Amino acid sequence: NFLVKLVSSMLVACRNPSGKTYYQILSVNDDASYDEIRTSYRSSLLIFHPDKIHGKCGIGDDEVHEDFVKIQKAWEVLSDSKLRARYDHELECARHASEIAEDVDLEEMTAEDIDERTEFFYPCRCGDCFSVTSEELQEMGLLSDVGKEEGKLLEDIKADRASVLLHCGSCSLKIKLMVRLCP
Image (cartoon, rainbow, N blue to C red; front, side, top):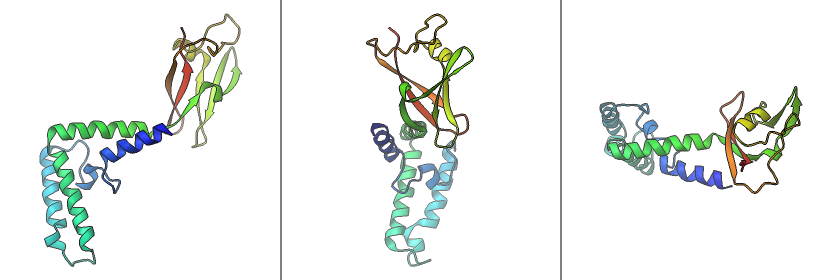
């Protein structure tokens, strides 16, 4: 799955192997000031420096060194405004991308006639569903308007595909709805 690979590579770029962000490693908020980050970095060094905890608490040398390297790397990135801006951007992209549950073709959605329109549904893993109406698809130019008849999907027209993000009504997940563009 391309999206899973993309999200994984973005997360590798934004997080260390332990899965924590650099902000979490230094125990600061994402919007922390330089001074807050520096203070937390210095405190972390005093606590996790290999010379300070060597042989204490049953922690092995490898673990101590690994934690120390994570703190150093977090400081290296977050203390440099350009590296931090790039890191923040990649982290934000990874967070948004990870919320997309899957790519869904319009044909995979269940269509129900409700009043004078068609509503399309797709189940979410939380138990609720994603939905979009034929009117919304027409407004986006993704469904043809055929008088009072039910809208006709533009399946037989050679057109590029477009994607629309649909949000679940109950959770933070999104799907990428794939449909054909109107000519």
